[in-house]
Length: 199
View 1 (cartoon, rainbow, N blue to C red):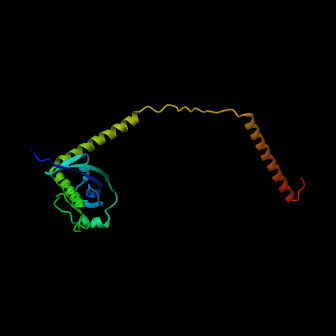
View 2: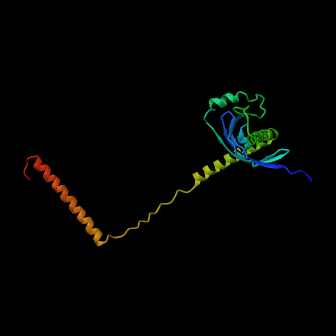
View 3: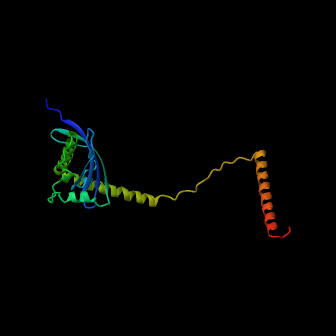
């Protein structure tokens, strides 16, 4: 019988810079502190992947990916200088030499495995990304065309509900109006007296 592979999951937040570098944040599968790194891989090429595997493990991948218009923070910009110049997929972590828990070491190994997966399937992943971009553009153009050709909306009808005043409500309103007029007259009378003019 073949030995069954282990299973794990990798939860990643990826912010892609304008130059294609990616700021990564991910978490150990068994709990622990969040890990961060700068990668020279444009993680948009990895969108849509639900899982990947190595010789020993099958990873379920949960990933949120989005563009980031803000430049890298100074700490990560300094780290990015250590990325390989030959295009080999890699990532650099702050405090890479510090002691890590077993769960964190497994999370680092999972990220390394994801980069290895990208290297092994680079051409296919880039083609799939290009196809998704074409499909997205076609869908956008179709929505714009449909919006331009859509008939104008018809007139909107409003339904107004109202109820006649009850006798006691009408009497209260009339009384309030009388009191308001009396107060206005009294104020006018006082102003006239203060001015020394007889009414």
